Length: 311
Image (cartoon, rainbow, N blue to C red; front, side):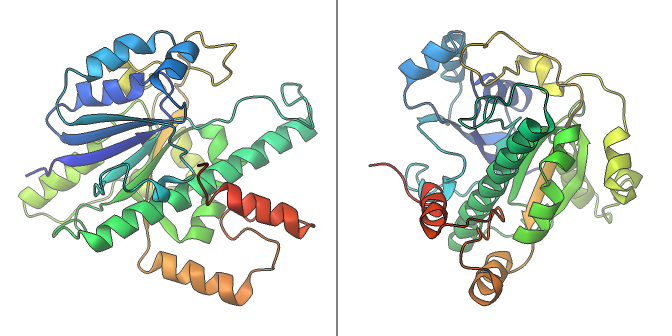
């Protein structure tokens, strides 16, 4: 029997992804916390005017909370905001920082500009993953739930376009943070997002051993080419992917080359990271994203930016 899920979505833009998720799984999702970096409902409506309809539609469901001003790289600092909820899954669809950088025209088609943007996004992914694993690990330790190990919960999600998996150094970050793939990840976003979770639950009910499909045994590059590109499955339920540039918010629907990635911490992952930091890490190197800094003040500013909340 499928256990209902407690889900946190982050960085959802106009909130259409969270709404589509609840529409697709009205019974499977028990509690849904929707979060956005924008500081208020008014700010959200200024950037995404169509979000009013989505907010109203979300309000028609029970057990849904919308949180504003939530930084996806600092989730572990918001546990009280989330009422200490033990999330089963943290979801982040198409993370992106936009296209403006103070030192380069990253919209230009130059190798240097693309490298800067890729490096920034690699850092974003690393700090999101570390924060989400810290949040879920803390809550799992405080409020353990029998049977979660068999269905591979809690876990952390990303939905990325295929090229970003390599360009943003996802698998290097996974190795550094002691994370591993679950639920046959990565798999095309044209598939139902919780299909493997439902299959695991069905396998448990039938008392069979879980048989991974051949997809999981393929090299990562081959996995990403597997399956036809049919568009994002949640698009059937109203999900509309939009660019992050506030001056360019018209709908952008071509996310057919996207892949769902579900990750889980290996046993004692956080303890192993802490041990490595104490024993091996250079003084001016971030243990989360591997960024190097020549000046100690720059390193301190980087660390503080991912560890403190304003106010």
